[in-house]
Length: 95
Image (cartoon, rainbow, N blue to C red; front, side, top):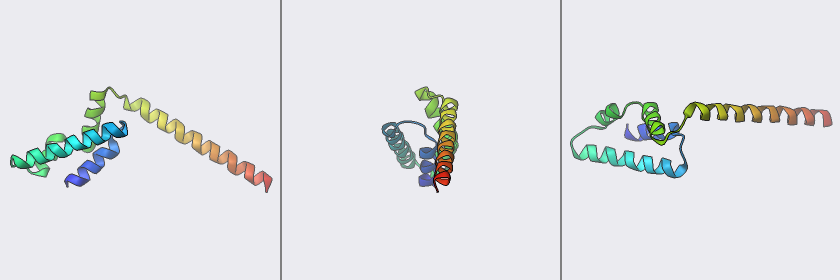
């Protein structure tokens, strides 16, 4: 349960690799500390919220605007798709 939660959080995070590693380390420490105090993994997850909510809170703390990031990702995907179509068209003409 813990590993799956952390895996999902990691996927949701839109931060640098270094920040992501630090956040995951802190998250593991939170689970370990809670376990030492008799808390179950489910209780920790319930307290932290969904992986998306947890990541959104982290983004807010870091001042990251996820909407802008998503727009940029979408623009890059569209650019790659258009480039692929142009290359495919050019190869078709050459053949």
